[in-house]
Length: 112
Image (cartoon, rainbow, N blue to C red; front, top):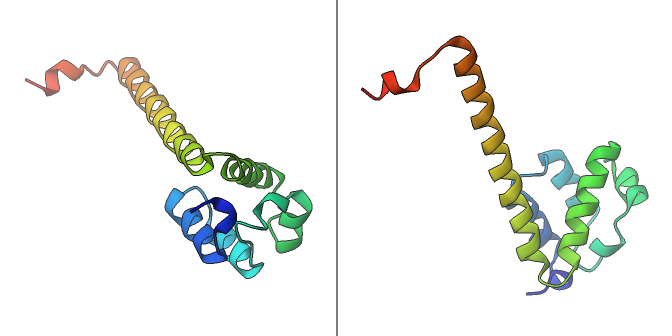
């Protein structure tokens, strides 16, 4: 099903499944009855009007909306979520390794 055919419930389910939206944001979108058809019209003013006032969050939500509204958008948006998770994991791993190196912890001892 194309994004423009999504009901409000379809959209809020996608928002829940991506695990990138706060429960309050999902609730506000549902309360405003934002659907796939109205999603391309979501902008800063709409988000502000429904109660999402953080400009940073507005930008993120608008970016996801744009991805969803483009051709093969669901796959693109999902790939963004997966890629961000992968990058976050790499950063955390590197940070942990740096911390271990600074404290003199030797990972080879643990495996023995």
